[in-house]
Length: 271
Image (tube, rainbow, N blue to C red; front, side, top):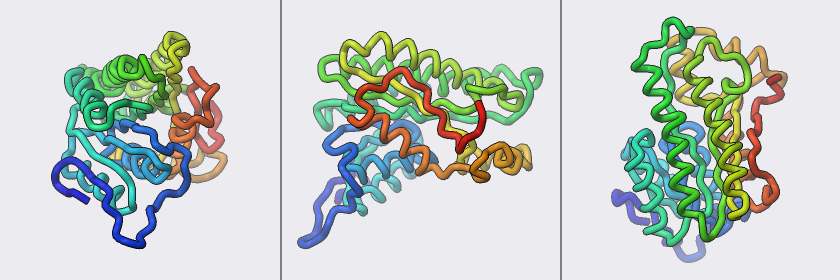
């Protein structure tokens, strides 16, 4: 394993066994954005365990390196690229870097996102509105644009990360919910446009999930987790790994006839 270079390479010791759970994503090259923490980090670890070669993208090089090394230590194949997923040039570079390293792009999980302080429409600043749309919508839009260009000749699968907040009224996070609803519309439109080229495009809409972002919301508005949990029939929030499982299936060949779907992953919460 090579550390500190942005790459994690696999050199298993004699007699060692790779920590691969199954072959759901075997031999696929998958780009994961927002991969330094939360759902993105869980997804990168899971995809690698399922046989994929993963490229992680985010702004935080130290956190990316840590997740990349975790994957390598478990026997997986991973590298990373530092990128601001709200900047189109960085998005294009992340896709280009993936192709430079591995020759193709088979799948992408567009998970990068930012949160803003909870509050009603009347209290949302222009700065916060622009931030959440720059990353959570514009970033996903241009990620899909770069990815479909990269998959034009080979086909592939893309999964965008939406939110239950895009499917129901979201008075505490109206700008966040609106940006995620725009992602749903993008997903449906792009799925129709590129289906004939063998590119499947879907989204997942997670419910309450125990991530750093939700912890931030809880600090800003105590009781958020308790209130959210009360609305879930399964009576608990999701773990990031559970959300990642849904993305993994949609990226896999087992979902070969599924495109244009926004899949709620909500523990049964009504939408």
